[in-house]
Image 1: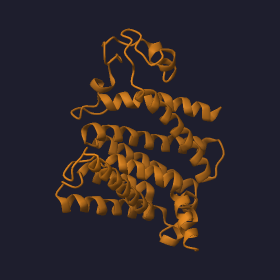
Image 2: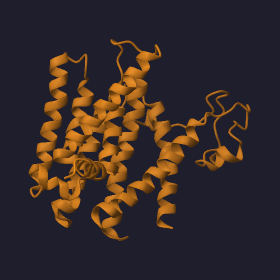
Image 3: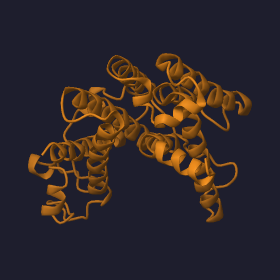
Image 4: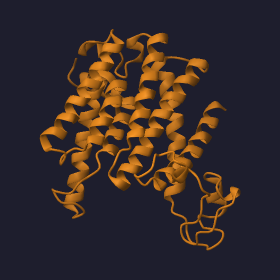
Length: 286
């Protein structure tokens, strides 16, 4: 029942978040009434939608993917995002249980809420960066507050090793038993990597928004999590960039938003960081 409720909230936030990201224009605060206010409407006939036309997933299925007024097809992207966020929220809850070794309870609820808030903000950031090529400062600030909350709560309730996304392998990289120093080093390393790229390329190879995003990511994922996150992001970014170039969609001089790749790197480390390191060391016979 708990996971069913979490899935439902994922559907709701997926619907709300996608609309919010589409409405954001870069000139207003993300939660400005001009952005979040106003009734939803059909993008084709502009008819204001009734409440029963806005029920996540259900309305799409009942209306067979069409607007009730003009009968034009509604993009499948809407239910796809809602379902994706629903499953993501559930998988986050399952990962929190596994990561911290806790059952349902107050600690579980707090940590699940914090991690969901963090990844929901990354979801908004991805859509906005893809649309407009910018990462709003308010999202970076929100991520920093959530990251600080997760680390602070963890420091009070759990041991550093219990929290590490790399499990016992974190000991091999050092700083595993000093949670605040570990995560401050992660933030500093994030600034060094991405801030250095901004400075070297003079903003042409990497934007300041990405460098700012590296601060909360580096702080939350700590050392050496930020290294794995960065490496995965660059590898996937390079593969996608080469794919676009090969099919004539981009050129070597084209700008590609890097925020979504950092988000993919965050998901990779959160869900598969320990599994990847464990696989690598077994592959090496260590």
